Length: 185
Length: 216
Image (cartoon, rainbow over all chains, first blue to last red; front, top):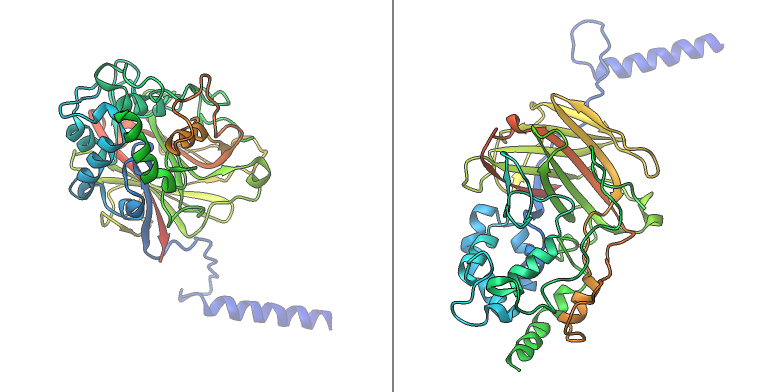
């Protein structure tokens, strides 16, 4: 009886497997490839840190996330400039510049296209005192760099109360080799 | 006085939108608190100086107790976009999506279509790595000169975001010195992939960005 059940089971399994097998011989093919079908539609995007957060008005944040970078400048540069000059006393007057020599139009023209520029030829850093926007390393103090460029004026000396959050490093040291990020808490 | 007025004006505009959002953590209403919320994106020369490491972090502000239950979403495609020609349109993509206990990677490959909608480029170089469970040593795989990791890590972002919120709210006029890292002690779900420079343009400057895309 037990044997009959086993045979019956095998027959049932075989029938099921063979019906799902398109080959014309008796080889049973089991397909373990995961399903990667379908269309995936954009929900969030990011190039440089804090751009959507700081420069995009609250009602436009979802729209910014679903506007492709090549169309962001036309759609958002004007909004960025309005929000920058409203936000920072260092850009309140005509002709004001940041330490990169950019006025409000030039600075927001750079930022509105939210991509991260990466050099394939050497140092990669958001800003290290010498190299500007050649990548983003884990230890880069990107917020202080952005606060300085927003509030620090032509020589990084304006609005010192607002141009440095005085958090200069991560709470755990990074690894010197892949995957670089510290273990979770 | 003009400065105070200006700051006050900004406070009113931004107070509703700025509190508790940072690098790109919970940056917009539609993605806030979802598996599509990218918190940060990094691109830097690797320990092997012939390669670039890309770090994509998602699902931020995970407490240690919440981290073991957090998982990547099989319906969320993470796509690193690479423009090698300077027009801010992707020439190459690297796609990452989980299936079961593994994170699968496709590319770098020229996408069959650029823009807001993507299909998974299954004919591209395909790699995979076991997703590192919370509390385990990092599991790393290599394929075709690339390295891969996926799993929970410490959030590498640091900022006194709480004090920034106080300034924007008009409750403070200055950062503290020293400041307090609002993101200390919190985790993210990370995807790290290191790619030889020769596979993403070779030399010069590339423009990169990351997208989270949901299955329709």
